[in-house]
Amino acid sequence: MPNIKKIKRLMDETEIRETIVKMVDKILTIYSNDLARIVLVGVKTRGVPIAQIVSKIIKEKTDTSVPVVILDIKIYNDDLSFAADGQAITQPPDSSVDISSKILIVCDDVAWTLATNEVVHEILVAYQPAEIKFSVLVDRFEWHSANKEMCAPSFVGLKQSTTSNQIVKVCFKETYDGQTAVWLCEKEESNK
Image 1 (cartoon, one colour):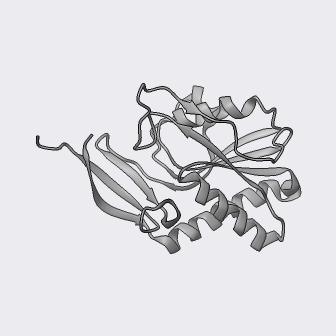
Image 2: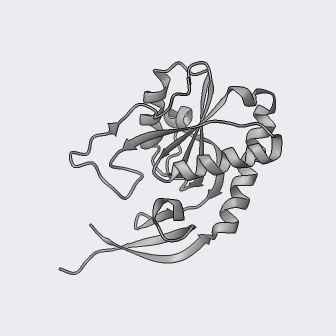
Image 3: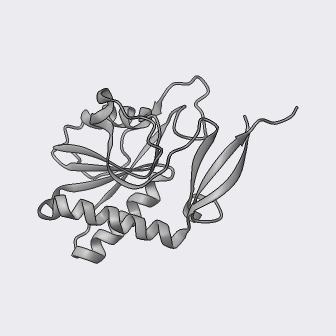
């Protein structure tokens, strides 16, 4: 596995919150009359704090509580961790909240190839929600094709182009990253 070198901070903690506030404003523009039907789905690991922040901001702005459920999906693509056999490892949403007939807004940290979104969509559609929308803090903007529009993020905080040697790393204190920030990083091959 290559070493990762931080090359540029894209957002600090304050900028992350400001960005999520703008995302919430877009959500409220579309769903202000349907808040009681919304359930936020945080993709474990770094989508969970994003979903929790979205829920908190919606509560601050509307005095409406929007539930957060956690979806644990480990897949070989958009994350730095890999499943041993390269297969998706999924668990059903961790919640007692009924998500059928609800508007699900899936929160994740980074969209890259949309493979994670495709797997999440496949899992959640089995619960027969009214809608599934995707929200990401950072869109690497490398997925764009007509056959992936169903899983495309509807709510995006930051669009960041990257090279094939770069990654976007989202860090949260809540996920034991030691800080809350978004970094543009570069993969360095280790000299062994």
